[in-house]
Length: 274
Image (tube, rainbow, N blue to C red; front, side, top):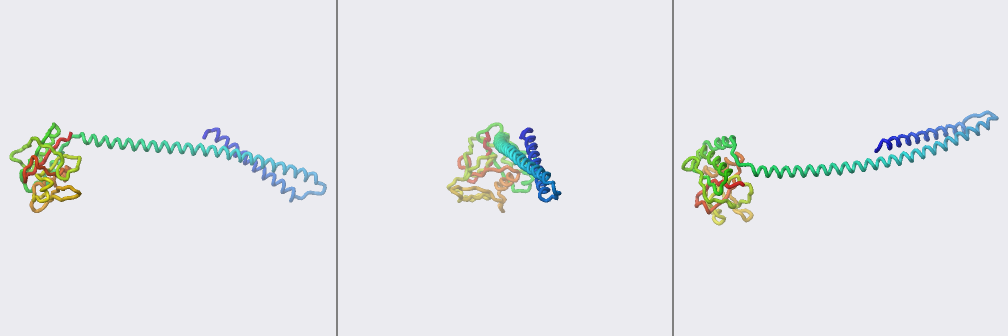
């Protein structure tokens, strides 16, 4: 709406009001003519008043009609412009919301990629909590295996080995990490893509259900053999370790392997991340 439109609307609304007032005045004249008392011999004056009243009434109606029509046209045009402006504003708002959603989606993708590129590390708090959780638990040797390695994998394996040693789970000597041609290609029931580390036992899909490994349970579901650990009266070291890792927000992948483990063996396997 322009300033000119606003001024024109006010003018024609005032014009319409003027016409309305003239109509009222004309009606007053007509009323005086019909109800007023005139002396004998004042017919000429009465006729003159009648003509004036009629003229004022007609002109007032014309002015009111013209003013009202013009005001309606201008008002209709202003409303159309306001509706068009509102539609454009809604479209711009929708486009802005869409751009915002796209930016947020891209940020989430970027954050996920950044998270993937971050090196795996064990924080001081995680280390302390892990040691406290296993302070009075059953002890036993725990192997740490590393296959294809890089600096990130090797450093993470050393940190895992360190918290195990500090918790009393030595494997012959401190800092004992086994390197070899180990490769994780998916264990029993493993469909996860995120793999900080794996708790791997010797098993195959064929013999897993019949195995009797303390603290380890195998179930068959949807065509897959699923491995899980459970804390029980056996105080199984594998179950204690898996439980403690989960409690410090390191979620191991549980799986079976029959290439670099022998029957009855289990280990923590550190795969490459990159």
